[in-house]
Length: 423
Image 1 (cartoon, rainbow, N blue to C red):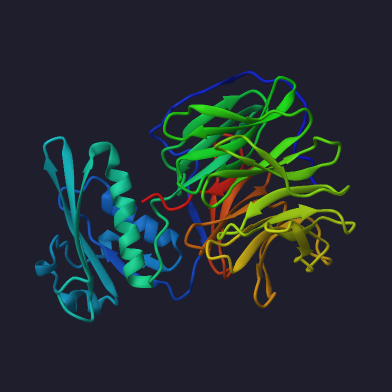
Image 2 (spheres, rainbow, N blue to C red; image 1 turned 60 degrees about the vertical axis):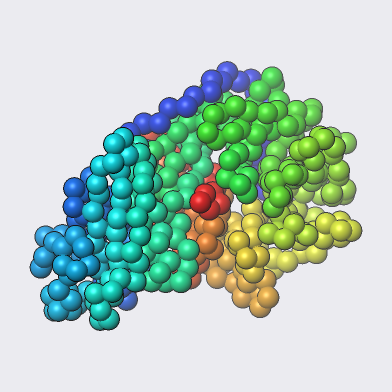
C-alpha cells in the first residue's frame, strides 16, 4: 500500500483568495457518439452566460452544443423561435433567454424548447443573482436543462477539492467542477493529504503535517476557519465524514497497529472500529451509515473490505486483479469505485464494481491513476492521473464512454474529491 504519511515540520498560512482565472481547464477527450444536438442561443445582453451553458452541456459528453456562427437566427424568447429553422439543421432542442439588470443584481430568464413539439417551453424559469454569481447562475441553468432532458440531476453547480503541489508548495484548493474560481483553503510548504467533504458541503476534513506529526483538521470552506480533530502520536490519516456529519472515521496508529477509529464530532469520544495486526486504512461510509469500506492487507495484498458498523464484522468484497484500494460508494450505494491493478497490467487504474452482481468494469487504465471520487449524481468519477511529467485531474463516466481532462498550468494536481450537491 502506498505510504500516506511522513513525519515533518510545517509552516502554513490560511488564505481566502479567489483568482479570476481557472487553475484547471476542462477538456472533453471522449464523448458519446450519439450526443444530442442542442442550440444554446446567445442570451439578450449576454455576459458570456450562454457560452458557459454550452460548455457545461458539451462537457457532459451527452450533448453537442451548436456553434453560434451556424445558428439560423438568434431569438431570445420562445415566441420568436421558428421551429422549422432548427429542424432543418437537425437540432433537437433550443435554449433561449435574456439577462436584465435589476439594480445591483441581474435577472436570468431562460426557456428550453423541444424543436419537434411546440413553442411551449419545457422549461420557463427565472433567477436573480449578483454580478459575482453570474457564472453560478449559468451553471444552474445547465443543471436544469440537463435534468429536464436526461432525467438525472446535473452536477454543474457542484465543486471539487484537490491538492495542488507547485514546486514543493502545497495548497488545498476548492474550485467549480470545471476548474474555475479556485480558492485556497490552506497553503503550506509541507504536504497536505486526503481532503474529504462533509455531506452538507460546508466543511472539508484533511491531513496536514504540523509539529513533527500528521494532524487532522476540519476547515469551513467559506471562511477557512479550522478545527483540530486529531493529533495523536504517529499516524493520523484518511478522514471520512459519516452521512449525518456527526462522526469522522479516521486512521490512527495508537496502540502500535494501523487501525480505523471513529470520532464523535460533538463530544470528541473515540471508538476503535478495527483491531488486528494488519494495515487497515482508507475508510469510507456507506450512504445509509450502516457500514463502511476500508483497505486492508490482511490477506497478503491490499483489498477492499466492508465492515458492518453494528458489530464491526468485516468481509472482503474485492476479488478482481491483484490490488484494490481507496474505495468509496456511489451516492445510491449500489456501486463502489476503487484504485485497481489487474493481474495482466502494470500500474494503477480505476475500477468500478456493482455490489449486487459483482460485475467489474475498468474505467481507466493509464497506469498511474489515484484517488477516485464519485460525482454526487453517480454519473461521473473524478480521479488524478499522470500524463507526461505532470499529474492532472481526469473525469470518466461510470460506463467508461465519456472522458475529460483538467490539465493544470500551475503544478501537479492530486487527491481530488467531488462535493455533494450544493443547492
